[in-house]
Image (cartoon, rainbow, N blue to C red; front, top):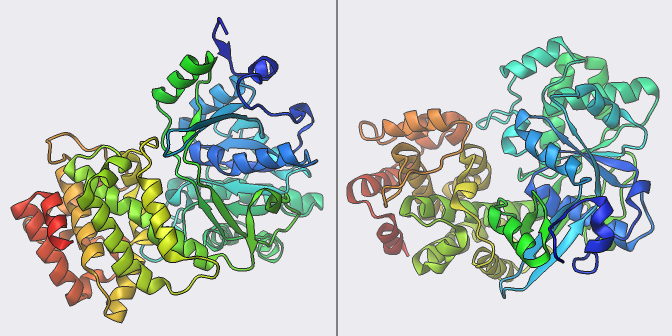
Length: 494
C-alpha cells in the first residue's frame, strides 16, 4: 500500500487482503447488547467474543451499542464514530508472534452526557436483551468497608429527585427498566463483567438499593424479573500506547486512532441465568456454569491480587512494567510464594482446575515481554481493588492461623507508596485513585503513628484490632521507613 488507509467500513474490502476483517454484514446487525464502559478490556474480551460469534455462526441479533457515561469518554466516542465503530485488536504472544484482526461487533456508541435520552431509549428498546458493564470497581458506588450503597454521592441525590435525568449507571438502569415495565416489555439482563467477586450479586444489591429508594414498586418488579448473572472475566489488556498505532501504520499503512493490545489468553465463565435470552457464546468457548463463585475467587485472589503484589512493590522499586517485575527473580519469587503460601491454602479444590498449572500460566502471562503492562495501570484505584483482591485472603489466614507475612507486607508497602509519592529512583509515582488524597493524608501520619493508615476502616475494616496482624504490619512499616530498599526486604522474606 502506498498511502495511509483510515480504518472505516468503506476501506475494509481493501484492508482484508492484509488483515483479518469482519465478513458478516454489519449493516444488518441488530443491537442486542448495550455495553456501559467501553475501555480496552471490553474491546479485547466481550466485544471480541461477540465478534467471533458473528463470524462463525448465523446470528446478527447481538451487535453492541457502547455507552460512555462520563465526559472522559468523549474522545473514544469521537474516534469510534469516525471509524464506524471498528477497531484493531493486536494480540501479542510471548514468542513475539502477533495476530492482528479488525473487530466489528460494535455498531453504535452513545455519549450519555450529551444525549441521555438516547441511552434510555436504546436500553428500553425491545431488541436490547442485555445491558453489560465494565465500569470498574469504583463505579458500583459502595462503601468498601461494609459493601452498602453510598447514598451520599451527589449524583445519586440528584437522580433520586430527578429520575428522568440520570447520571450514574443506577439512574440509567432504573429508568430504562421502568420504561420497559410500562411498555409491557420483558426486562434486560444486567451482566457485570467487572473484577468484583460476585459481581452480578453486587450489581443487583446496588441497583435494588437505589431503585427501592426511588420507586419501591419498580424495585419489587426488578427483584422478581431481572437477572444478574455472576461472571469471571480474564484477559490482560494494557493501556494502548502510540507503539500500537505506529505498528499498524508501519506494518499495514493503517491508521487506527485507538487500537487495543492484549495477551492471547482469554477466559469468560458465566452463570447461565438470563432474563430475556442470550447469545450462544458457548459456541466460541465461553463457559456457562451454575455457580461461578469458585472460578471468580480463584482469579481475583491469584491473578488480580498477584498483579497488585507486583504492581505496588514494583512501583516503589522503580520497575516500569509487570513483565520487568517478573524478569527480576526477587519479585517473581515473592509473588509466587504469596500465591503458594497464602492464597492456595484458602482456595480449596476447584472443579476442573489444576491450581499449580494455573499459577504457572499466570507467571508466564505476567512475564510476556510483548505485553508491557504498566505498574501505574495495575496500581490504579488500589483502594477499590485491595479490599476485594487481597484483604479477604489475609482475613481468612488470620482466622485459620495461616501465613500472613506476604499480604501484610503489601499493605505496609501500599501505605509507604501512598505516603511518599516517589519511587526509590526519586521519580514521581503515577497514583490514580479516587481516594488518593485521603490515602496520602492517612499514610503521611505513619511516622507519628505506625497504625495511622489502618484507621481507614472503610478499607481495612477491623484489621487494626488484630494484634497478630498489627505486630507484623508495624514490623514491616519500620523496616520500610527506616531501612528502605524494598527489593532487599522482599529478598529477605523469600
